[in-house]
Image 1 (tube, rainbow, N blue to C red):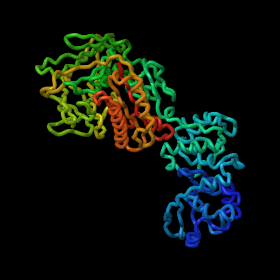
Image 2: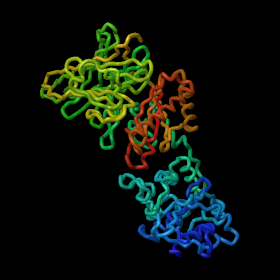
Image 3: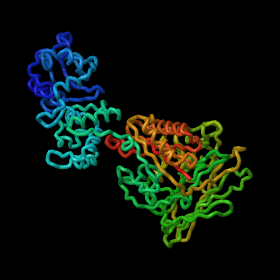
Image 4: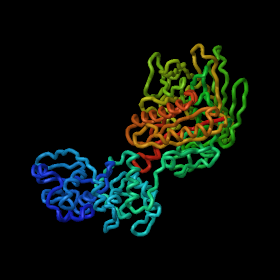
Length: 628
């Protein structure tokens, strides 16, 4: 065992074999002559591992996991020469050095000793490549976060494996396998790095800034002639403009990045679905938002961009006027036609043999504070079709995205499902925000089979299968559907509802329809659990505002996303923190608060539940600038 340790340490200290005195003070030695070493790390001045060679030898090469290392450290002499003991001790760091006083006694943690080792490392030239072609820094890749390995491969695209294959291609192939997301299973061994059994120090690399510092050290140690500066603009901020190709630098449709930034002619689909379906945009979509007296009742108002929509069923197929997020829902087979009649609007859609008409008309009430919304579905074919209708309203009361269902004076703050007699009369919603109007929803004629109140991200992503999940409501929406029925050839069916407010004052109800607009986007990336804007991200936001011109900005939609690490509640709150800080900064730059709308998705768009290599792409905030 001692010989194995001596061999392992040779690359760190050439005179290690002659050591007779411990590098730990004598008092510590003689109290506990038998030490159990979990692992030993040498750190740079930033506290990052530089060499894990000793732990690699212990955990990966010389002993099995079941064996116990017992080291009589008092047998070793001064480190690397007679005069180097004091400075060497000052610079060494033992990480989690557990002491075993006796076999039957509990293992207790000794105090963490943190010192700098960089001068000693430079003195003994341990950054030079050893006989196995690696440096201590290269070895530390194995003990880092997988994200760091990914960065190194990015910076060294020509790196080859032992058998001459492209290291990048080998890593990519393995990353596609869900069971291979840990460092040790990325075929890193083919790069000549230590085996996967070595104990990783993932916690050391949870901070993105520290990761970048280590990347620079890795590049320097591996013989890179020029250390490339890590540019946040390139890696952390992506700017997209609708006038250009809207695929991202990572590849793939930006529809997967955002609900608002749908590329022309493409719907958002999951990995298991084929893309290429058409989606209606602008005036032809028929989507709408509603407000009163300058205060919103539905999300989007007063801007010409809405997220409320409907889905219609035809046998086993589905179509909608806002198809992002569902691989089962396509868009309509012909371009919708929109017109205005009786002071309202009419939009006609075609889906196979189904003829669908959406009408938004004055309710006829004396107050003028509500509208009638009617849907007619006609089977123009000869064969019967199984049909149904699903509608989702994205609620927003006076700029607040959190509205609650009210039963009497009591707000219901968790998602739930209503049906039967619960759907009779008016169903009321209101935000807790002071001055926000209370809206109502009621149904004429046939009542829906069910009405779901919950978070937009849940109801939106679940589509036709929306159901109660008992989660706290933070971004409120209401979804309702009518029971499917067989519609004979030539037959039709109608559904009608009323939406508005009973409150006095505030002026008349206003319906704003989707319209074509100029849009550009800024994509900000975040570290794990981070929500504070960095200086570079602020600079990019200022640059975008200046490029558009403050006076030309009609509105800004800010979407917040997280990865799937942590709980649903944690990620929901984290998403809100990110978007709110972005909004605060936009206001500081002179954008009025009423032009900024926030949409918080939390983990709903996370690409992976367990793959840390992909999670970084999920941690983002996207700003959509709508301009004149």
